[in-house]
Length: 291
Image (cartoon, rainbow, N blue to C red; front, side, top):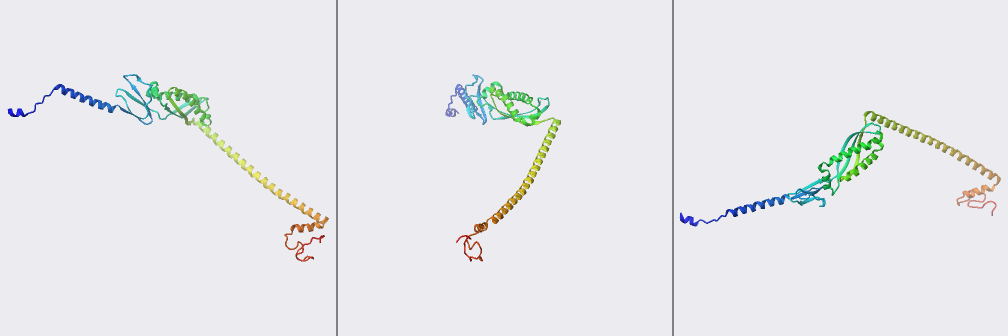
């Protein structure tokens, strides 16, 4: 038994060293975990900034973080916002200049100004859409109230969109928001007014159809006149031909040699202008009065 004890190795374990090694292991593990937790990503279509709660807070001098992965100290926060365009849609009932209620569907296309996400966050935070809603609804009521329902419904849509944009754009820019466009998607009128407009448009189409038929009748009448004028031209042409024949007969009676001239004008150079059985014989070409 004594021999066995003598063969056992003698381990000299220092509790202080064990505690130190365990501490080093825990610290190392924590550092590894923190290292992997410190990598944060900015997704496509986003921009971000760092918030240092134990330091300077939001650093506006630091460049905005674009799409990618970054090493951020675990005690700091990487805050991101989407900078893609978004659409806010509004269904509003407003009064026109005459007090008639009009229901309009309007879309406002906007985006956070690139490079200004930190400023937007400090100005409005995540609830910046409330600012967009308030400004958009106010501009819609303000602009549409300047026009009649007929103008809103038909002829002035582009002008209305432009005026709403002119009101919104300066306010949006001051609050780090970019305005793309405003679009009036639909206009709904009260039933009685809609019926009146339908009847008016129907009557307008009937008037246009009547005008087209009137033009068609005018074209047909003009065609008949032109045809009649064409027949008259034939009569006039025949009259001139008759006068030419009469003039030619007078020339023959006054000057017999006129017949000889006409024969020579019609001669094609073959044979004789007097025919095959003339007194001069076939193939003889002698004009009377000449030898």
